[in-house]
Image (cartoon, rainbow, N blue to C red; front, side):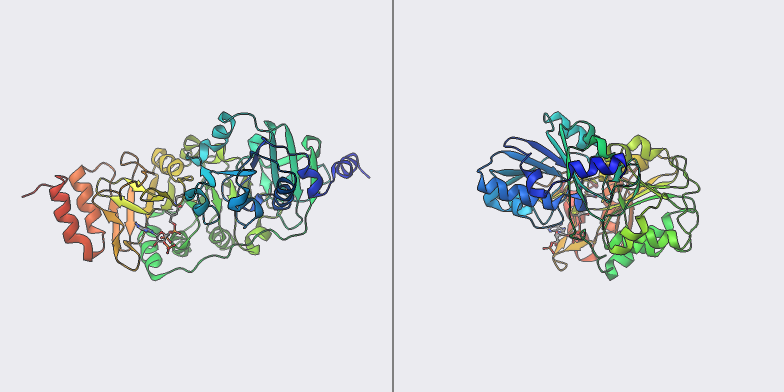
Length: 435
Ligand code: COA
């Protein structure tokens, strides 16, 4: 048995034993999404209930499983301070049982440090290799915090991919670890609707050969990707690695050959998708994972020429302010990496950013282009950062345009049922001349 295997054996515990090492008042940070250490958290929640633990704080971007700690009655014991708002915590936050820390994804690890001592870093990892290293697998976003935490707990999952990059931790740095056999969560790609296809058909031609792309999850990014199979030499620098990227790599479209930084490699901070994505990433040096404070740093993003970022939003006002994270005052989502990539793309030579949305919501009854944002709506991408807005009716190119030109460009891509009303409101608000 090697020295590292010996160390592994000594540090191996059950999730329940690890839970005993986490105490009331501890601040605990996890890598994001699929990398949440669910067996440890479930054991911790059971212990917290039984032993009346209080004020443990858990931080993660986006939980992908319903778990005991997310029940309202657990909130005084394990309080969830979310770094994003999603289906698993939206109502909890609205009802005051969890809270949300706004912030650009790039600055999230720094924001955690600012909140005080990090007692625990925990994450799901892939199996240990012969040199004693574990890969963070599906998410390396908070990876830098591993060196700041007093205790490090790993949940070893043989179904997690051994992804490459700046995403490894050595057994000597680990306080304790446990094993789980529950397969990591798979997230199938959603349907591409006709509206997604129409939006995608406007954006795809904007992506030249040799461009570097950022795509998120959802119908529009998937539809854009469908339109890229005749392109060549594309690169990837993206917070998320997606299934559509696997298809484009396998088709020879993405080869990263024109990137100025990390030439030949995709650079990302997390992934989720189907088994196909996880199998593709397993032991694949072509995709490099790194902490989000590196990947989403606009300066790093901007180093690649022709950086194209594509994201979505809730609504846009006639000034070009983009709300992506709330419906009125209700937190619906988070800013995530939207602004990191808008700014990175804008600073890249030849770069462009696209914020896409269907022109209407709620079965066509609500225009997503509005005179002003819904009262309480949060500005995610400001009018000073915004570049292109896209709906199924076209692209409104806002950069460098006057206020009147912006309003007219936005009205031209609103749903026809709402255009007259928007024109008269724009006149009333003195955004376009009332003559
Ligand atoms: N007014 C009222 N409700 C609205 C609305 C509006 N203007 N726009 C959307 N909604 C409702 C929809 O009807 C839908 O409600 P339902 O769930 O009851 O059907 C819900 O909000 C979600 O809308 P949808 O268009 O399906 O959203 P989506 O899944 O495409 O996500 C964002 C859109 C904006 C929430 C998402 O892209 C996001 O979180 N963006 C910010 C983060 C980001 O850009 N990160 C970088 C890339 S990973």
